[in-house]
Length: 90
Image 1 (tube, rainbow, N blue to C red):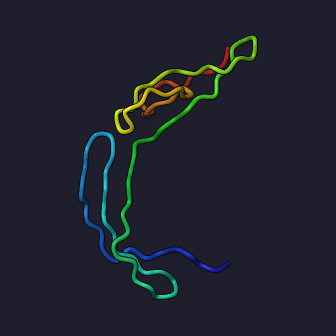
Image 2: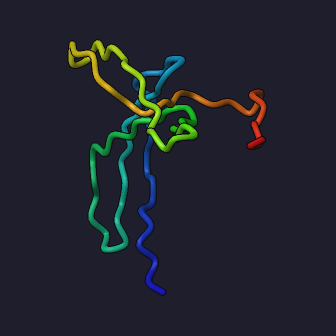
């Protein structure tokens, strides 16, 4: 199998906060091309849930999204940490 993995030559942390991190990498492709900059956005583990009621209706929630200045319908979701219990169906 051909190895398509890029090699990271340099990495610089640009932003580090609770909800996301941003770094700037300098990379080299297997063909020798240097990619600079290559921005990487890192987020916490995120989960979404496609939930159905007993009568097969999809559960949705209304959520305000400040970045777009809109209130939108979404399927439920959020950040998950290993400290949270995993729920099993009844």
